[in-house]
Length: 150
Image (tube, rainbow, N blue to C red; front, side, top):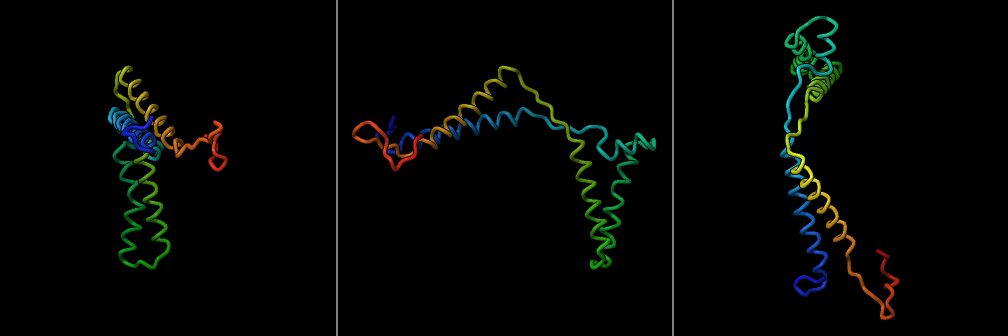
């Protein structure tokens, strides 16, 4: 198959169609996912269970190490313990935020199957286009010894 009658047209065609199918399928897959948050995260849930604190109280406590470390850094940036405290505080906040994220997929089964087929077809075309590099044949029907077998 040589679209346009030129050498290398098959590879360009397969790569182009494969990329478009893969990109559209991936877009529709990501578009069907809704991101929400849960009531408690990793640290706030642990604080709420042990100490009986509510969600807002435990969330406020999570900011204390970051705020203290950052405040001391603005006063004197040479204090190593302030850098460590601010880093630990930031790490705690990132873990808390990431542990609250919940993903919900809202799509029909038929749409999901079409999306997955588009992604798989695009990946297949991309792989086929990648492997369809200058296939030269010898006159006796074999492959060129310099070319790796496909």
